[in-house]
Image 1: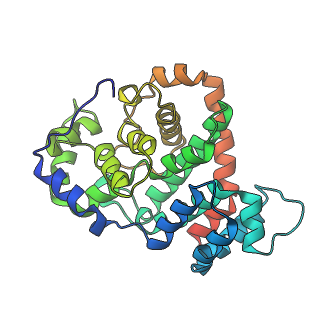
Image 2: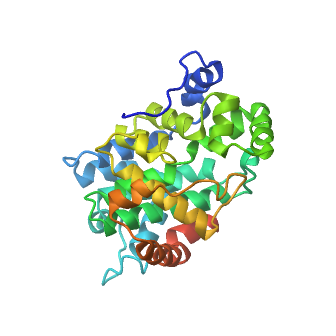
Length: 294
């Protein structure tokens, strides 16, 4: 890490939240197993199928996704094993993560003035945007960047659920003017939603680049020099804010870092084209419609 803040190791609230994360927001056992199996290229499909088949809702979503117009396979896919072959392990992992994290991303996040479903809509659109940018710049693992986009604001859920009483002061400081929303969080709590979010995903044993990307998604210049994913998620996040998807108290309060635009070789024209692409995908992708209409 080149620079950036360091959370005070004696911060009592941060320590309490991090210590309790496994209890507060555990990843479902099935999802942990799916992540473990799909992350290993040596895993055979027959090893993965029993874990997937334990969750019939997930099976239904995978089959719906495989048969959606987004993938455009030439014939109908009727079995989960055929779907895994067609979609690949990374996409299966993403569907599993998207469906499993909905439970805590879909609720109201009162501290940030986000109505029910708003944080999930925002996170989902940022996931789509991150993946679209990754593909545009030729990044080798666009599906990995999708997951980073999906989870970038998980810290907001933790703060809303377990530090609500302290958050009243964050809003008060922010409304006085003179501080960005991130600075108001840091001044009152001693840390921001990206920092607690990265602690959550670290506890979940997700990879170190994802953990760092969540931490620095508003300040990508502070991440490791080799981390380009953080710039993709940062640009996607600001893009989705500009599109007006899932705005809360802090909406439109984050600036687009020119360093990220330069690093990814993106122009304003590229951003406009990406916004149109993301909105089309956001409206049409059947996984999202299924998720929101359960």
